[in-house]
Length: 175
Image 1 (cartoon, rainbow, N blue to C red):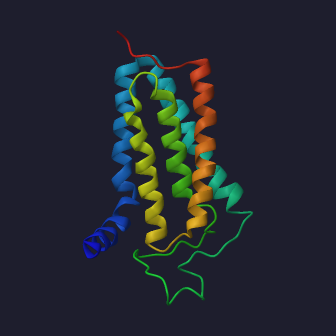
Image 2 (cartoon, one colour; image 1 turned 120 degrees about the vertical axis):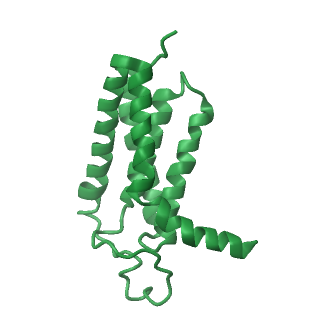
């Protein structure tokens, strides 16, 4: 059983963190929103794009440029002791994980803006964000603390635009 889980993580972790896996889901979500919510759907897409831009800018520019931290795959003390499962080790700072910030910001935004009309089933987005974030640790490009802090930052950055969107525009399915 343990070997099966380990094999799954070794094969799955490098795969789920790649954009070709999650971009189709977000593209589907954009189409779903536009089709079902019409004009408000377009405004939702605009807010969603702003949310993505904000979360990526905060993580990749504001935080990473000011908190320089070696990634596990570059740390000379860890190089011989970690499992590195991807073809490259990014040169940017490890703190915070931009994957965690971006996907948790997206999950929080989607969940908060859709929760009135859809159902609590949208909570799966947090599991999706967790899987992508955990993969960053498992493949050796982030420390757990980078992902934990990225999760917190992402949840905050996803909630703020969602709250503004819900207050000013809000989504309700046409009857």
